[in-house]
View (spheres, rainbow, N blue to C red):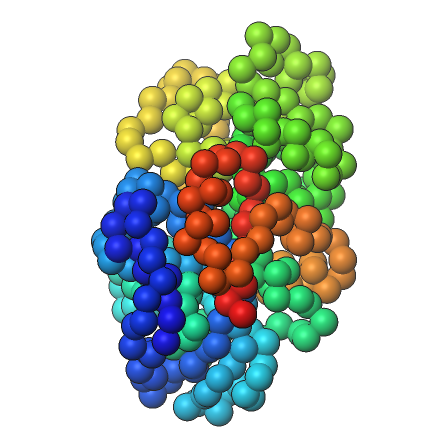
Length: 338
C-alpha cells in the first residue's frame, strides 16, 4: 500500500509499505481523510517528544471498514479511530483512567499512523459515525474530544466566565465545547493570525492578546475585578501557564492541556491564597468522543469551520512544506486519501 512516511525531520515521502497485518481483534480500515495535528507538525520539525523515525504520522482519522475479523462492523461503515491504545493492566487502567495509561501508545506517535491507504485497529478503539456526518467533520472529532475532556476536567457550570488561553485548534475547540455547557468564554492568544481567524469565523465578544500593555486591566474590567472561576490553558507556553494564576478567581480551578516540555515556576503565595485547584488533562475518553459526536448531531458545534487548507494524498508532500511555511495562517489542514 501507499503511505506517507516521515523518514526524518523535514523529509516526508510517499512510498510503498506492507499492508497492515490484522490481529484477531482487529478491523482493517481504508483511510478516507486525515486531519493534521500540531503533533504531526512538531514531528515534521523534529520537535516531537517520544517520536522515532521513520514513522507514518497521523491520528485524526476518518475511514471506511474494509474487513472485520470480529464481526462488530459491516464493510463500508464510516468510522473514526480513538487513537490511544492502553495496556489495560497498569494502575491507571485498572482504575478506569486508560487515557493516563503508563504504557499508552498513540497512532502516528509511538506506532504507525493513518497517513496511509490502510490501518489495522483493535475493534474497541473504533467508533461508528452516522453517514450524514461528512468525512472532514468526522476526522475532527478526535481533537474536539481532547477539548471536551479538558472542559469536563474543569467542571464548568452554566454562566461561568472562563478564560481559554491559546486560540489554536484545541483551544478553540475548548471554547466551542465550553459554550455547550453555557459558559461565557474569553479567548487569549499572542498570535494575531489566530485571533483574526477567531474573530472572522466565530462569535466571541472578547478575544484578547496577553502582550497588550493593558491586558490585566482588560481582564479586571471584563470580570468586574473577580477574575475567572475557570481557566483552561492550551498554549503549552510556560509564561502563559505560570502567569495565569494571577487571572484566576479565589477558589478557582485551572486546567493545563498544552504541554510545556520543561519545569514551571508558579507563585506559591498566589496559588495558596486562592486555594487553587490545578489539574492536567490528557488525551480523551470514549465518553468524550460520544459527547462530541452528540454535539455535532445536535448542531451545537461545527468542526468543519476549523478547516482552512486541504490537499489530496498525491499533493501531501508539497502541501506539508507549504503549511509549515505559512505557520499560524494554517488553522486546520486536511488530507484526502483519494
